[in-house]
Image (cartoon, rainbow, N blue to C red; front, side, top):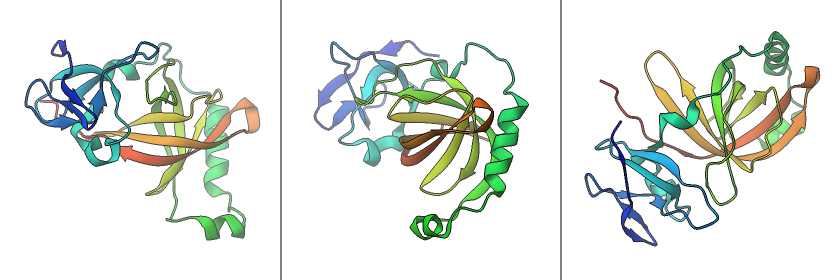
Length: 198
């Protein structure tokens, strides 16, 4: 990975990529914020910065969060009880009033993901954790984790054989589930870009 470069030509509309000059939805971290490592998907340059919320949705596909943020310190497998909770949620029919409020169809699933908590100022903070997507739609997902999510937003990295997708969303509700697991409803804000590896 290339050395992280300082953000250049910073304006209220993002910063210019040091490598290719494309505008990115990033800004310098302020004194009370911790910068995260981001990558330009066009030229693979790395930057230390914070998301610029004003233009995030417009330019989110131009960046992705650096792989270093998705390294979970402990690699113990998720407890089977968590998988049982996910399966139960996947087959449980929601009340009719909730079905009417949903904007898009939910697809049941059981996909393990890495979750990175994001603070209110869009700065990356806490240690990442492993979770499972119980259901997924165009607008959001039901995320089940061994511990509670205390951050207002999350970045979830979903890996498959062919690609790695990073989804940024707002935590709209959380609740304790069976077996000490926790559920969170996440509404998507943006999808970050993909980088081809090799």
